[in-house]
Image 1 (cartoon, rainbow over the protein chains, first blue to last red):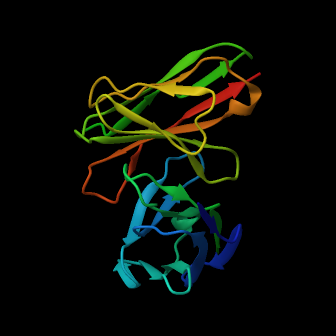
Image 2 (cartoon, rainbow over the protein chains, first blue to last red):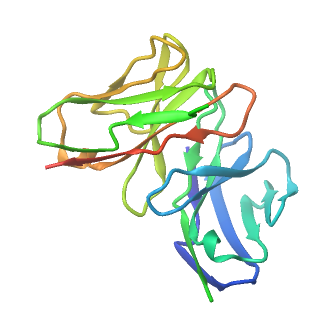
Length: 111
Length: 112
């Protein structure tokens, strides 16, 4: 099975850089995804790492290390609108493109 | 494109009642999913479908049923509502070659 753990809450100031970690115990997976969810909203896709290393998309970057069973989402130049919950997710083996989500990290950006 | 739409947005059920949560997507995606999200928690997969006529159980299927008669629609049925089914339900879809799932706005269900 899959188990993904994230810190429950992270606080940072506007303009700063923050890293949200995701550690996992899984028998195998195709890739690691990250989703953002604002309060009362739907999850929206941020990034996907199929291979080890860093993927950069604007202010957001995501990293995966399969040997360390670890990944992270890096948010730069934080803005107030980045206050949201962030979820890592893995696509386990088997059909269907289905995802197993982590517990989620609530990011609070302060002035 | 409207993307993924869900109805209703909110619903209150009494214990033992039944209801169907509707989900429609207009992106011609083969894959569709139902998740539930309890307060402060991640999403858990209830059922998924890889195409019309094909459905399979996810992590938490008990108490739910699905059908997929068309590519566009993927309704979720609750037969005998229980308080443990109080949650926010999200429908999602994607194409077979994509790693991005597109989510609907959610249905907030309370069972009293």
